Amino acid sequence: MSARLSGLTIGALTLTPAFDPDTAEYTANTTNATNTITATPEDEKAAVTILNGETPVNNGAAAAWAEGANTVTITVKNGTAQKVYTVTVTKST
Image (cartoon, rainbow, N blue to C red; front, side):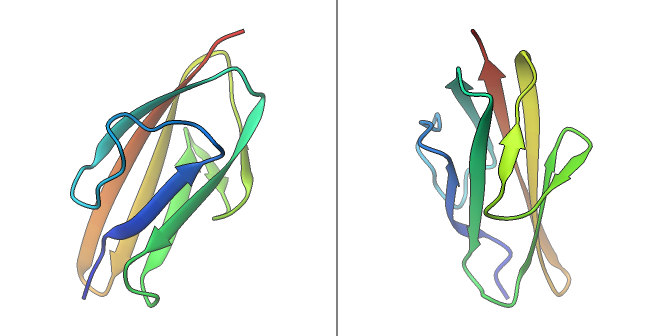
């Protein structure tokens, strides 16, 4: 059972480092008010939960950014397996 992502995108933002299923922490910069977060699990049976801070975000829906650093947490669960990815999105004007 895989609890990893095969893909992760936040709008057209560039993730640093480039996405790798084994890497758990990323950063990105934006001037946008919102970006769509799409997390693709390796196993279609896995459940994906996305939080922007404490606010739940549906997979494939837009997250609204506050000025400064925003922490996005993506949790992938498949049976007893779990992996957490974190992206710090920094919004500037």
